[in-house]
Amino acid sequence: MTFNFKSISLAIAGVLSLSSCAITQSVENNKETVIGCAVGTGLGVLIGNYLGGKKGMVYGGAAGAAIGCTVGYDFQKKREALEQLAKTENLDIQFTSISASQDSDTQQSSLLISSPEQTMSKDEQQKYADYQVVGMAATVSSNEVMFASGSAEATATAKQKFQKLAAIYKDSKQNILITGHTDASGGEALNQELSEARARYVATLFNQAGIPTERLFFQGAGESQPVAVNSDDAGKAKNRRVEIVEIEGKPDQLLAYSYKQKTNLSYLSRRSQDKVATVQPTKETAQTTPAPSSSTAESASIEMTPSEIVKLLEPVKQQQALVDFGGKKMADASTNFAQLVGVKKESGFALFSKAYASEISSLNCAVEGPRVTGDVKSLSTGESYNRNDYNTADYLPGMNGTVWVSKVNGHYIGLTPVAVIKDSGTAVSAPKVNIWKNYKGSSKDAPNYQLTSHVETYYGDKGLLYRVFTSEKDSPVRCMDLVMPIDRSAAAIAGKLYYEKNKAVYEADFEPKLL
Image (cartoon, rainbow, N blue to C red):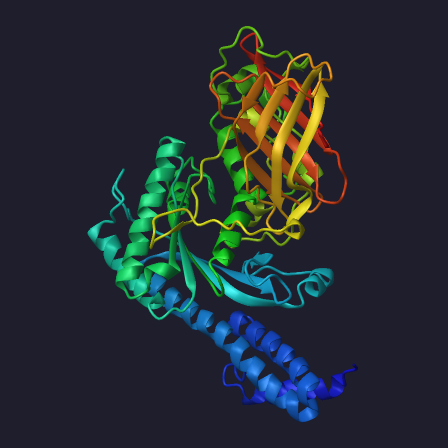
């Protein structure tokens, strides 16, 4: 089948001239509508031409424009209402646009999250040519106190503001996720619980405004996704925020958005920079290590003296290594995983300043420690919302519930199951860490250690950082940093295993292969 592209372009122009949502729109100020109209019209024209020739093209284009314009126009009008609310109520509201490929799975797409000022190269424009705006995220913060310390209930003034916010969404037909965020004051676990309770509180206000509980979801991210420094009041105020995510389609799209946020290296970078800022540099370090600037952030490495590293580490008590992996005492807090993983260019967020949007963390897992974030939960049930119907094609190659193994200093280590979703780079299961001491090659022997874990992933354009923390109190392994391939290779690109010995942290090479 062939298409007359001249006729198609004329049809698109004709349909757009009939479309009230595209006649006078400025591309800069009405991005959601223009993209929605253009993509919707183009798809409609192609379908119409297939079904009914030139006449069908016009009707198809009109139908496509109606759908595309409606979606984009709804988000545009909502953004305008939120901007007006921000002015009258002294709120800071930042917006990000959420787009999805029209060729993607109907349940969960590979989402593109972009800030209004983000620009794309010609290659990127071609890559995302079939993407259409399907949602919008509005992040709300304020210099005023919105929740009393330790309380999940908003102040009287903040409650009125949230109610006005909810009124803007009351006619929404989409699924909505409300995520709570805190600053880094206090313990991480407590912050996560508090942020979840606050998100649920705001979701309840949205329900009272008329949105059914079945379309409302909430999440507590705690301090795991900082967008500003936590060392001053202004930065803390930005980190104390509520994010409202509205996406067309099934709730799986909200899950995909949450997954993509968890795997964004920018959040890890911001958190790492905060951690380093808590340690006063010695004279030796100050003289030999220049402070990284935004222009050198991507290649900068964090160099610290042993005494400074100790200040960042959790207490180390073990005198004898439970399993000696033959490593060396950790002398540097930095690692090169970020350069090996790369940075996905489409992870542009309006919330970050340009300097921090391009930062790369270089702290290893032993120093960084695990991040605490919560699940997406349904307001109607209060239970975690999960998707369990993945098929093999949804996973990264070699990471669809597989086993990865390696021998380290005579000890055999296996991770299973390793299961990572391709589109978001998210681990959908935490592997068991099985360790056979002084392994002799018998598959019948039970492992000496079978450890539960907490796993984090960070997605790049070259590889995947697969970070494993063991959960047991008396564990022979503190954590692992693995750079996994995102192509069909069957061996880790690089990897380190961190353990305790002589009341210090040691590191050993650990580069497992697919079994």
